[in-house]
Amino acid sequence: MLKKLKEGLRASKGEFTEIRIEKERRNEVKYEGEKLKNIDSSEEIGGIVRTLVQGGWGIATFNSIDELSKKAKKAYRIGKEVASSMDERIELAEVQPQKEEVISEQKKDVREIPLEEKRDVVKDYNRTMLDHDGRIESTRAVYSDSFRELTYLNSEGTELYQEVPDVTLALVAIARGEKNNIQTAHDTIGEASGFELVLDRDEMAEEVASGAVSLLSAEPVDGGQYTVLLNPELAGVFIHEAFGHLCEADHFYKNDRLQDIMTLGRQFGPENLNVVDEGFIEGRRGNLPFDDEGVRRKKTYLIKDGKLNSFLHSRETAKKMGQEPTGNARAISYRHEPIVRMTNTYIEGGDKTFEELISSIDHGIFAKDAYGGQTQLEQFTFSAGHGRIIENGEIGPMVRDVVLTGNIFKSLENITGIGDDLDIIGSAGGCGKGGQMPLPVTDGAPHIRIEDVTIGGR
Image (cartoon, rainbow, N blue to C red):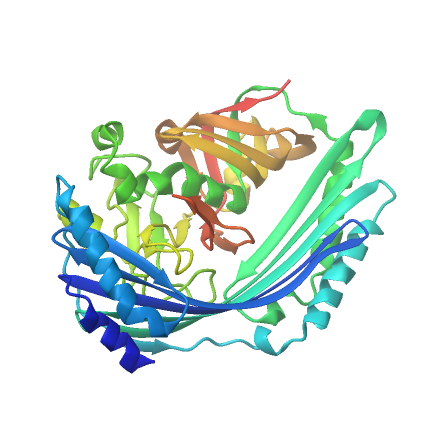
């Protein structure tokens, strides 16, 4: 195969050409209520050739390596046509050519586990939720795994082979109480690991069902301004969605308002606030030592000592902004070109214990877990899975319908406590951007205390 890939590179006459081939095996098992809704196993192979011609990208995809040379010539013709209508030429930042082979490690290789065994594990967790309480009206239990083999070559001499396992489990329970009161609880896990990740998760299933039932008796939160303590899951999603996307350079340099606000060196939070996007942490979802442009990933401080420190880059955006590539060019599959995406994004741990964070809160909300949200530039809205009232430093009763809204820059300024209990959390699902969804990512944080957060409610 390597010989044919190199022939494909030679067939392109562009200034720069890259070829990415992916072989992927996928499995999914889905239960909804009593019914097995889906059990599926598939395998796919395909590739993409991308060539830079006179400052314009030409792209062609293929499903047979025998088509590669023809597709490389097609990409060249497309690139030349694109370049003829462009006002600004695309250039790439220089990087060192890489040659490496990355082999995955799994205790229980997902490729060797029968699909029936995967079905039985999911069936048991689904049954655990259904049998937990008579008020559990419905459930959803979804298992998925994939094993991707990625081969990448470019005309600068980079040659890479990388293996990427991915395993996820998502559990949802829906409870119905009196007066048509319907409440939902969920939990997910996801890592670049083997089948061992989803074994012995009965407690997870019990807690999801218990959470849905508990919400039936929870009162809706009273709206207002609160000191809020975010748990690691919610704080991780918060920093990813509300701030991380603003640091993706392809988004930044197209937005005049962001360029006015997001100036390097600007103080955005307390001096002990550090926000990181770390390209490779062993075992985390979507992890690879190299991105989809063959650039070695690295640890990038988006915020360092409270100040904006860096953006996330592809080779194209790095050249445009006069900065170094960060290894953040990612594509969801061979059908897409790489764009700037996050990897493992988290707030570094601070020096406060949980007790210290909560003891000084006279009246607040302990907001836990994430159940969706949206952002519009610096404005955010997030729904917590549930909350707890905090009174005089003590955790009180559960409340529901906890929706946090505000301005990300004001909220970062209002951080008054960072816990020492960093938790980096992999989940099912993933990040969406530019029509590429769901891309595996990992978020994390310690417990975070923020003053004057607006919470919607009754």
